[in-house]
Image (cartoon, rainbow, N blue to C red):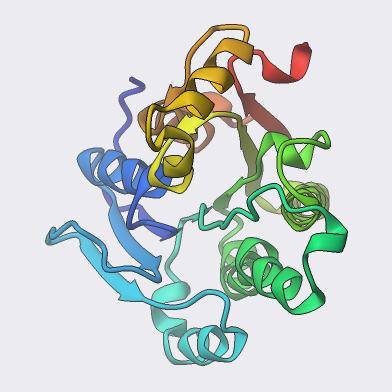
Length: 245
């Protein structure tokens, strides 16, 4: 695990109640950071450096109102970790509908965009700030999700890359992470029953296992550390070799 000192650093983290987001939350708290955490579900952590908010990121009106009323908090964010996301059960286009696609896009893309636009001006003004977007192997290849999920993660990668290009010379450090098979509550269905699906995924992964959420949190810690200061606009894949097959 990378050891860094994040004292006096304020983190804005979405998707903090479980899985990768919860691992990131605990990792940055352990490193001394102050965390503003958002999730639709209650966040199961209490800490004197944690301010939790329960928000439905699929509701753009609710999120917009929250942003408008919390500008003071958002103005001091040093690191934005956009981790919240939802799956689509590998649903093909003709088996879904526009309303379902739009709701998924709101969580996976539009909430990330709204929050980026809320913190970016302050980062540019300070000439310092960092963002890490949680993409997916579905943001690089087809087959990592259904039609809506794959589209959403490609869109998120595009947003990240353009931000990274446009604001690289203004002190804003921006990258993304593309996880493959990570053992989190979001993937609980794969482990249901006899866990046949989880076993199949592990068998098809070159390293023959799922990753733990902490492995992704540790990669995030690297991407926001001084050691990665020359890394810009990149998607760091953590998939056990899935995409090299």
